[in-house]
Length: 362
Image (cartoon, rainbow, N blue to C red; front, side, top):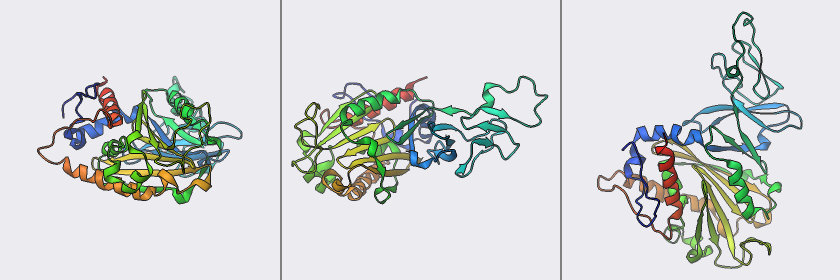
């Protein structure tokens, strides 16, 4: 693997990421710093954290493994702070708890619910203490209709992404989203995380891999729209049934749309259906192993299991099978790189371009 990755911005001439990208352990580790530490990550929904409580969680466990705490006082916004004591690095909170203060169980250092240093025993004689670094690191957090997104050291403005998304789906009752546990599931796949994203980012494979889904979607009109740090695949229906009821002043009025598939760089999917949202988080575990988190949020149960979302588990199994076959194929000594379909693989080309841009940044 070379130090730089080049993806031609002209899809008509561009080649895909080389096979070595998916097989090189140094590259896999470097992506933590180059991409994931500059990203926004979905961490769950506001039902996780009660008022006057602290909730510990780990962002991208087994990869970044960044320990954080969600805190929330009475009638206040949710905060996200580091779960690592600024004294000696101890994990502060190990399980959800009712608390207004955070106290380290190692040496008694105390912080406010927003991570501000308050007190430390036996430090009266310490010079130049406390300093800003004695506070807990505060992570930017966005609460979007109850869904929580945390920025690590983000390179782009996530609010701008959400504003653009809301321009398209703001007619839906997003504030009524309710978690649906029966539609939520975790999957394990023996493939590189980026291969899973590659597959998600194009409808090119639908007629060949998803026979049932292909009967629902209008493949000829399937379209991909590219934005700065996200893209949208619009899934048109082959029938009038099971589509969004789109208002007259909307850009898509009069169209039979069964789903809006949003992908946000590098590893988040928001699949919008007439019944609600399926959040898919792609979590790298190793070079050839990935965990996929599926969580469903519903605002209209009467439209569940219909149209493009009729059998999501079957579609997932079909996707996993082909992606795992690609993982095996990349071990070939004779496959180096491929080309993009200019009409059907705009999303994959966009993803590979972003990877190259982030990876090549000094």
